[in-house]
Length: 322
Length: 258
Image (cartoon, rainbow over all chains, first blue to last red; front, side):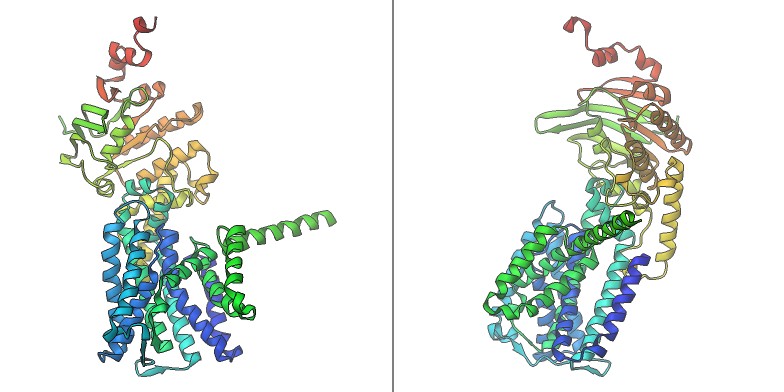
């Protein structure tokens, strides 16, 4: 997967590994857990946007399907946590295929429109199926996660679990990017007609990536449900879908690292904007606009350009002195 | 007599009311270099697009190795053994020279999303074979020294060669070259002619569209002349040079313009 990637990955794993040893505040740990949960969906979306060239406006729905599958099946039907988790993945896969197979055969942004509608439908279902989902009142009493008899309660344990899974899914995504499939996907981005002539089954790969991104969202939803133990529809609304997209765009689409950077920033930013009280949304909006205005390719690319500029400055100064 | 590798019969293509190709029939024999010539708008690129499945014909058939292939998807036709280059270079600009050719191996390899994501056994081996074949193809067209450069960093002449290397990556039995010498200078054109002959020597059949008559006449075994989507002549380079209809189509009839 490339030496550069392995180095960053090792650094990331090390940083996450030692994080709880230095930061003991439950508050920071829980922010980091939410960051990990978000990162999983955003990685899937990044693959979809950056490599399949498609936009989803309804990924919160898959996130919700994961969360409600885990919640409803364990609370109301007595399923085991693992079965409920798998059911969420299964349901998301089926739904994703049902949306993607007809729409991805067409050129253009039909997937965006279809996922938008899908997101709204699922949101209404969460609200209206009172007996099953609890409707607007939500669903509470979701059990803590237990894996092989080990209970994941409390911040630090869950932190390691979520980030462990996030890292594994990150490795999976990187493996896909640096493979025959990843090359085919990048080829579609480079020239769709040439990719077809080289034998790439364009629509099939787009469908596969969309399904993969839905599975990532579902996994993330299940992890969310078992962490917060209470879920309600607003956590899976259109706004959430848009926020997830923002994370990809702010970080830089076309790079999974950019997606992670975007997730980190947009998860932490609202917390730092608390001092602004009622104006926090306004400041948040201005910051997002500024980033997109000055770094339309995303923060990761922006940082790269900045680093190069600084290097140039240093070199030219040395030349002057020398 | 051997059977033709490609057989075009009574092919027609209309875009709305505009007929791009009318009742076109010809055959390509295995191991040949066959050229299609004709003025701009004669339907040459349209023909290539039909053969490679980018769009279906409105009538007639395309037979490859005795099998009707028109109406099939491009990836199916690629797998059958037809590959091509493009008149206006269609490389993957977001990838390196080597990666472009590696995409050419796509159809001859098979590891999918799940196996590559999990890095299951076999992934590494297949990746190595893709890399080796791609390097071999780059070597064939003489671009191996540029393998790690981005496509945007190499000149047009080399891009044309890269498209050929990528097409050869699919192990084609028939390669369609759409104006391989378009935009090339004299030296580059000689190099191109040599490579086209080398391809034929690998027992790959070549069908090419080209405007440079010197190139066409020097390398082709057989020539088809199109004008306004219709075949007006077919034969060896010598036949074509002396054909009255061809001269008229290219130079215009003297009387009308006099």
